[in-house]
Length: 592
Image 1 (tube, rainbow, N blue to C red):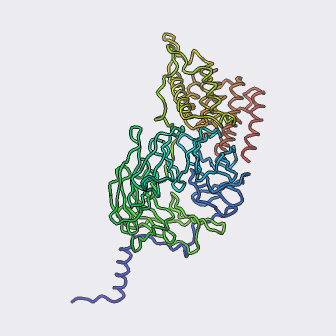
Image 2: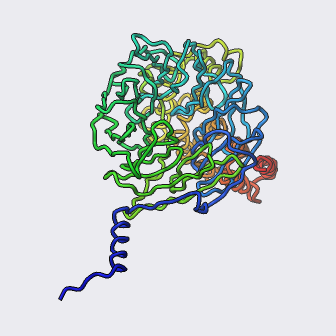
Image 3: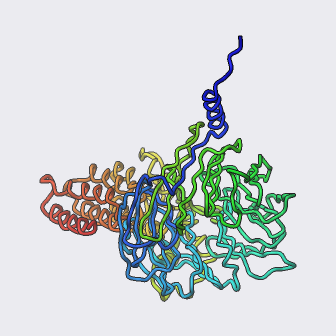
């Protein structure tokens, strides 16, 4: 005998099937309570920038603030110059910002002003952070480059730029500067090296309206609905691929995060995922129903791993590679000027009433975890370096005293030399020689002196070696720090006191010490130093202070205080203890 299902039981089955079919988490942010709330001193004026600790933001009242991914306000500092809306979080969490008075300013990671320089033109977009610490600025008719020490490296006049398409860094490190002028309805761009040398003018296959940067180069969207990759191979720009969608319409190109191999092209009714390297179509997802995305109102869209994250003015959602929703959020009815998603899956809304709200987005049944943002490691633009040989006992020194004096002047911040310099060739050559010399000094430091072989060149020529060491620390770039750390440690163990003193004295010139490796190396030198060597001990104090003052981070300030405090121990001579005490007072003051 068959039993009939009761209406109540049928209702339960129906509800179960509905939930099973949905399989994603839904949040109505008009009803949800935020996971955290932060209230900085004023509204946030432009999109916050990602940092290692969370985010940096420009706020009302001429102030910048740093806050964590979980909404903890870490610092907030006012600045003298009234900021424009253009700023960038740079290497080591420094902050480059452009002021209304056409000046570029560098703040340390805690918001303290390090220096200000006059750009000489109106900057039209966020500064572009380079791989070796330098930054690129762009106006309507100018492009310029500054180093971390405030030195203007070069400035080029490139007239009538298309400022609606930001500067972009190609895969070889060269910069693409889009022009306003069209040729046969096709966009043009100037490719310029990080050292200011114009390499070529590129004519594209159509009129570009959007661009995004990926590992392989720069992907552009064109008015005819196509998309294409511009990449550099064997020193020349080439078209990596071109994709044309049959459905028509101009695509919106998603960002690529965490070295994602996929790029999303958002059309009116679908998003197409391509391999960024080849342009090969991997899959597509229909943007209808719960997955609707307004192409004209996109707040953000990016791929991370194989997942796709997007947000328009009404909804935000995450899709997996199968095209299934993992979560979806309905945005607050009250418009939020800026919305972004953190690595820890907080959907953050910056309101117009001072508050910043973070809503935790839980993943769906797949429990898929989004990869954390990868730290961008510093790198030299070595593909533009010249092939040079280091100094040796046969050919002699690589640099004359005149050349060394020229390099010291070039790396300096003296305005009278910055205004008329042309470094298209000079800087690449200078860094090429310094890299070869420092690499050779490091190699020689690893060779044991047996007494039966020829003494290496740099060991025989201490005065010249000290000049090279000093020059490498004054480049204003983030290229020699790691080799410097190795040299500090190896020289401390070798007993070469002259070279050690030169290294310790100049270590503070770097300023930038992103991971505290220079401070760790100085701490190691201190542990091996002669208790009576006041020259080395005082130089350790000076360099520790300069690094701490540049960085400003509480963790590094604490590490600096620990190093200096050790010299105040009774084992050291009174002169060293007194000097350490005076430097410690300056470090404590810098941390306030």
